Structures are given as C-alpha cells and as structure tokens.
Image 1 (cartoon, rainbow, N blue to C red):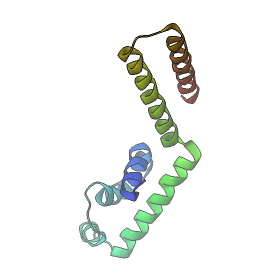
Image 2 (image 1 turned 60 degrees about the vertical axis):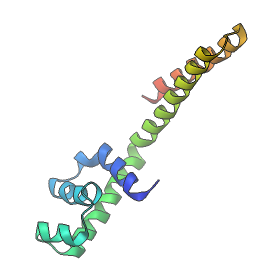
Image 3 (image 1 turned 180 degrees about the vertical axis):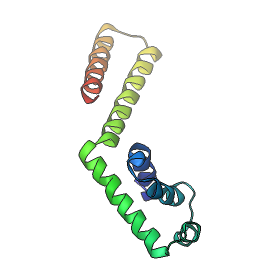
Length: 119
C-alpha cells in the first residue's frame, strides 16, 4: 500500500484519537499535501518539530491498528462482500442448474457467516 494511502486510511479510522494539534499537522501532510516547511510556518514551530509529530502520529496510528485491527477487518469484509456480489452476478448471468445454484448458495452462506463473525 502506498504510504500516503496507508496514512489516510489509518487517519480515517483512528484520527479522532489524536490530539487536536496532532490532527491539524497530520491532516496538512496527508490531506492537504503541504510540505513540512509550510506546516511549520503555519503552526509557528520548526520543520523538525513537524517531522517529529508526523512520525509520532504514524507510530501511534499504526499501534492502534496493530491492537484493534479495524482496517484489516474492514478490508476482509470488503473482499468478502465483493465475492458475494460476483457470485450473485454469475448466478444471474447463466442458466442456473441445481448443482451450480447449490454450490454458489453454500459459498455465499459461508462468506456471510465469516463476515458476521468478524463484526
């Protein structure tokens, strides 16, 4: 995963757990694509301080994901729902013989059960 995408995803899930000051700086980097120097000037702090805060935020957000695994569960559920969608589309496309219908139905139920267990 590209770093900026990963940072954005981590922030979307856990950003509210950062302090207001940390959120402002992290949003400047991740969402506004500002440089360290631009943020430093805007916040009235050194470029190094901005760098340290961003690194600290990265570590904090990754720590939350390691403990809570919300993003991993979200991605897993997203993949399973996409699979369910593909299976149901395939059932609509061709003639549904009894065996094919049964196999797809079993797989859809299995995926649904796995999703419910992840919630």
